[in-house]
Image (cartoon, rainbow, N blue to C red):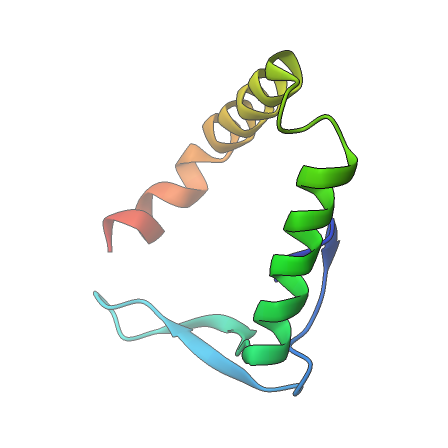
Length: 85
């Protein structure tokens, strides 16, 4: 999970398998977030919204979306089979 800019495990340490529905292959394990994790994510988002210019800096948000688009485009060959499943 990405919370406050950091990749973190679930606070419980629990995970669950990420299964490809087309092949039933386990592709990996992901954090099984609980209420504490949700609260931490909401608090981090609220802090970013209130204490940075994220909510008003349209150029920053556009730049972030452009970077996301580029990253997804760069990984499209790897993502295609996963998304198509």
